Image (cartoon, rainbow, N blue to C red; front, side):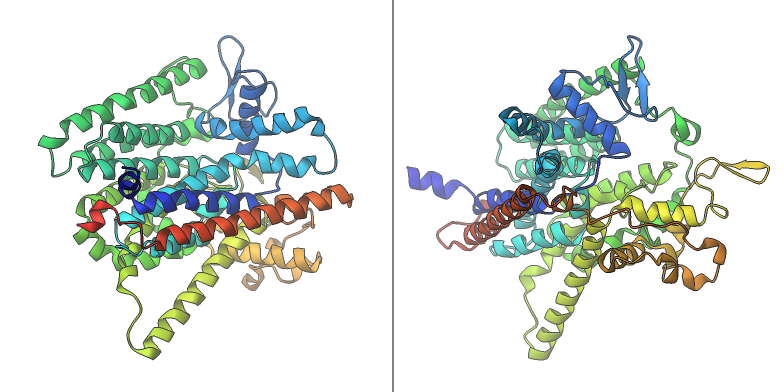
Length: 543
């Protein structure tokens, strides 16, 4: 009996647990060390208030993106999901502080590790769900290839960057992938009532991260019943019923904050003034070719996956249509939004949720193996190695240097030509729709080049920024960066300036070593679970 139960558990689920552990250790090991600024501070403070006072009413923070309710409670216009994802880490921090470690040389580093536990866990969940999908949608019985593809997703795409910041993108990504996994299992004919319920719950988490994901509910519902209407009405009913609590939550949350169930908070600043006014054609062009927002430039794995789309569509038509429909809906929504770029961030922030979905067709290429010819095999392996190294380096640049630094420098250098927000030039006040035109459309202002420039000066500890800035070749002296200082450091929790106290140094290296060893152990166990010949493949692959 026990042996039968063990065999019944699909091999990918056993490996998936170690994939999650590997992703969590990797993202904690490379967690950010930056202070919580911009949108992140309000999100973090809301989570703190939930732990310390049991309320979402803020007792501090900036005026922008906050509102006062009728009873005087000050709230944000952000979804509550990402703040809830931060709660376990902050609770752990409070426990550490209750043990007498509320101060000391290592407290700042402990605080960062605990604070970024939530984003790291969301990123690790995305690893796990993507691994399961790759196992079922392309790699056959070679589960280790799904592991390789998952590692590439987590380290060579923008998934890495957004697993170390307080944006809601990774919560949305994990939620959509989780819904995909559950509904795909339901479509495989497993017939378990809880699968559509879990799919709806995962999609509900994505909605709690950003309410725009409500638009994806019909897409996932249609996927559930695609080409199997008669046998899926029960599953569709369960899916719809499980979504109702999340709909009720969102309506109640809106009413509490803004006095109306249909008010999602996008009525102030530029949101209410401009709304969905951006030309969709311009956004589509930028998502393809912009030096700072190109989907393929910042996620080259998705470009390689294009070669697998034909096979993917033939083998998994319903899943391919789900990916295409999800992409079309989100590109339409965010492409029309006035702030289509989602700055200040790294790459196309609003499209991060599409990165794992766009990488899935790459799984169709992996079972084919390497070319039989020796030289073609060598060329293919060498080309792949170079491409992976470059993609990893691009993400490393994005994670090593604070993203706000380059955008602030680029915006400040060109203020007289490209106004940032409401800015007086001469006798008129300029109100540009896009405050970073030069970054979004001029290759010389690419954040990749900018981060390389800032990283080089950080390593060399030189402040002659005017001598080699990326747009110097344009020959416009008025755009020369002025007053740029080395007021930034390596964006890593272990680089937090805590002096040279031996306790801080010891904690930094000890914590890094522990996380590194746990990551290596998780990788070894994941690979072992993938290659264990005694474990049968899942029923779908066995067929």
